[in-house]
Image (cartoon, rainbow, N blue to C red; front, top):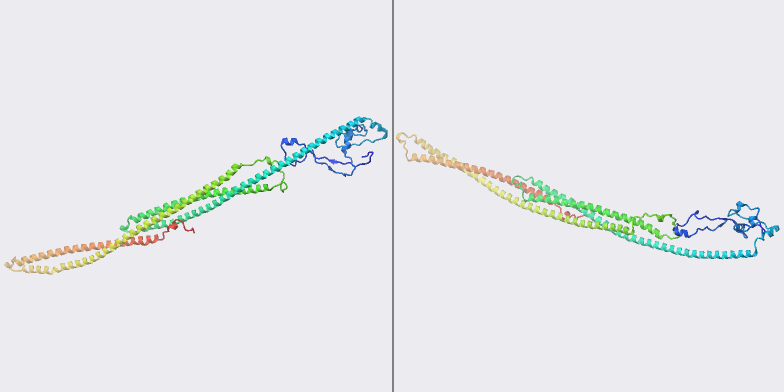
Length: 504
């Protein structure tokens, strides 16, 4: 470019992005706020040298639009003049047309134009100053409001962190209590199972005693007190086993409920940990922190599923549920203890009652055996005496043979008397009576002998009966005293039945 002052360096500029075409660095404001602010272009970037003196193209563009000289220039290109960013040249000032150039306006118009430009400049500067002051005020207000909002958000996050820490602490305490209760109830369940196993021995003992007493013989196969007590003992043990099984089933169900409540507590605690870490990281963020970035539209996303009231109620409900289950578990442990004590006492009481019946029966059997032995001894002695008596009777009968022979021989000899000598004299009468008396005596002795032999046979049968009964009593005594009472010595103690010993 040439003029009367010589060659100058003009500056060219890159125009800034227009409104709505560039990237927005802040989230969009409200519609009313956005309409109240005008978009602005960033400062122009100088691409060429700034060596003074320089004349920007704006000067020439303005001069061309204001000066009529540019309109009468023959070398002007209309296509170029219509563009805002075109560079216009001042027509050369030649002496031949100098008068024509400066004869269009009067000095009054020149001063008036200057005064108008001055007033316009003052008004524009005043408006610009007012706008600058308003912008500074608004900037300060928005900065203060932004800082206040950020402080309130940080305060709310801090309060939220405190709330989470409080409920997390409550959850930790309840988890510890629940874990301890689960361990205690599991131990009581093991003790109940151990007590149930301990009842198998007494049941086998009672049943074995019943089976052993089935081997009694004869009259001893009696439904005595021992039999009744053994049957009652079997019923008591089976009833105790039913109670223990019910306690085991209740313990298993309660353990499931306790573990379910504990699972909810642990799940809630894990969620609290994650939320606490997220809120703690959010609370630590500041304007100069690393990792902050724009997330467009995130403020319009609402994926929340609870309110502060329902959030606190959810954790509180979990705590209340856990406390209810812990109370039920403690009550169940008390019931288990009562059942263990009751079953142990019932079984031990019935065991003692059965033992007392056994001892009474054994004493009765011993007395009966002793009496049988005494009677058997006397029967044996009587048999011996009866055998001697029979021998004596037989000898007595045999001793009557000679006198009978003598008397009969005499009578036979006297039948041989001749004629009239066959007289029924006194000797004849006496011999006849003698023979009759001897027959009667022999008959009496023979009757006594048969009676003695019958008595001997009865004594022998009695001896056999007594010996058999004695063997029966000995068998019953062996069963009751040796087998049953010997087996019942292995009956568990009350401590084992109540499961107070550690489970192996």
